[in-house]
Amino acid sequence: MTPFGIRKRLKSLLGGKPAAAPAAKKKFKLVIHNGKGRTETYEGEIGQSVLLAAGNVSAPIASGCSDSSCATCRISVLSGGQHLSPQNATESQTLKANNREPQLRLACQAVIQGEGTVEVQGFEFLD
Ligand code: FES
Image 1 (cartoon, rainbow, N blue to C red):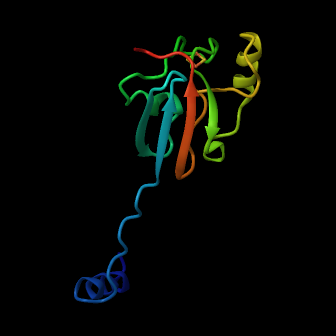
Image 2: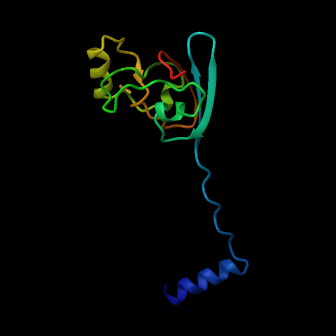
Image 3: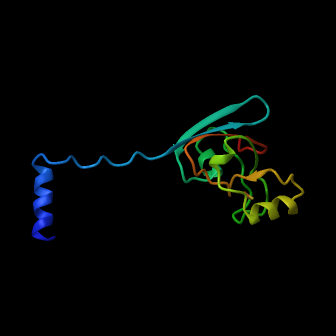
C-alpha cells in the first residue's frame, strides 16, 4: 500500500466517507403448485436451479437422473418466466426424447437469474 493509500484509509477510518455497505443479495420467490390444490413457497437467493430451490419445500419436485435426460423434473412455468435462464438445447432435446410438450421446462436446468416471483406447476413430487 502506498503512503497515499494509507492516508486515504486513515481518513475514512477517522470520519471521512463511510465505507459502502455490502450489496444486498438478490432474492427470488418460488411458488410451486402441484395441480391438486397444494401450493408451496420458497424464498432464496438467485442463482439456484428451480429443482434445487424446490428442494426446500415439504414436497420437493421429483428428479430421476443426474444428466438431464429423464424429464421427471418437468415443470410448466405459470408466471415469472423472464426470471429464468432461457431454455437450453439439453432441455429441448430431453423434452422431445421423452414425448413432452416443448414449452415445458426442466427444473434441473432452469436457473432463477432475476429478482422476482416465479410460479410453476410441477408434475411429479417426492411426497
Ligand atoms: S432430473 Fe432428470 S431431467 Fe431433470
